[in-house]
Length: 217
Image (cartoon, rainbow, N blue to C red; front, side):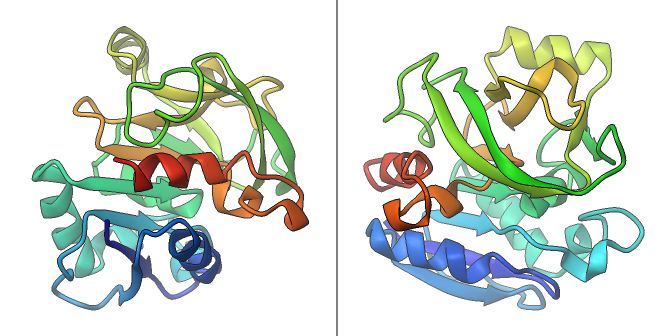
């Protein structure tokens, strides 16, 4: 499987993503946000960071970068896309995932490890986990408070689109949501950073399972 990491001005987890993708055999290439074409890849990664300095809203400007038109085509064709932290924000701003990411409930930047529950394994991203499994993954965000209106939330629940939830909700997200997928299950957005727990020397390997799932897709 081949992958692409999209680099926006202000991305700061792009090389972290590239490292774990390479380590799990996902053959990454870096793609600049201003490009108008994607290489032929199976997976697109929108990494964490602060694209465009989080001006206007987190992810709002990045959603209009030239490359995002190609990312949308890639997703519409049923190919895989994952947005991590700022990447999740970009996916919601671009309309590839429902809902929005707001300022954290207590208006503070949060940087810590959190426990997540794997709510579904019916995705290419989570098939190597066990449903209901508790995993430890770091967060680092100021705007991670996920919100969706009641109808959207019910749709997410009814369609098994809630992929990860927080055990101890750190940011006020509705229904403890930490990550969701689209209805066709090929686009995942999550606020926690699985790439930061993909090496034992860095504190854990629970995140690596996500990339191993993709490598086996």
